[in-house]
Length: 304
Image (cartoon, rainbow, N blue to C red; front, side, top):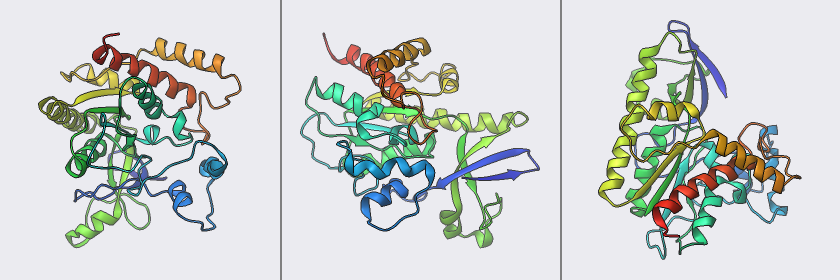
């Protein structure tokens, strides 16, 4: 992850992975060290944050990547059972965790115990913000049809895009107006130090609201059940001032209580707070989110 700064506006950018297919509707997930370990026997130099994945072959819960590079079952058009789609950022992708530990897979299994489901379809991709999450859902719909249900764990609001040069420095001009240059050099980015840049903050939030409103409207018009929540309190505070109707605030005290319950039942799990990459949320938090979101889903869909 690089750090580039626009000194004129005093904004620090934390740049992340490349933006995938920004100008076409091809659906493609995250190519990473983890993905390469699945698809290749090459002798790769694995960074410390990714070494947790090297033992996946000896773990009964494998690290599955489908042919479109999503951590998911293979996508398909024909579905025998309820068609459920999950999406989000690296938290939903599950960096640092195995599939069986992810909130999305835990939730999928809870629903699977109640009704027939078609498969586990997860669009979670590290580094992405609301814009790519929503856009990828529409790419998926274009290629594989409308799901019956969509669950999204929204990331923080500071995520946007940055155009960088070969020296990893932020640029605001495009050489020869080259579309190819844009495709090669756009990165996902987190904008920091924005205290004096309220206009930029609210400009992005306008777009975030509009994207989510369009998705909510599409889902309502096509009889798709949409469930939005976030692991970031700031997102809840922002959405509370909007008229979005399918966002659910997860109570912090209930999350904490559920994490304690998980830890008491799994005292030997050292990753209940922080995942194996020593950065992302751990197993207890994923368990808590799955419990709370399932209770919301159950209240809307099941009599008992």
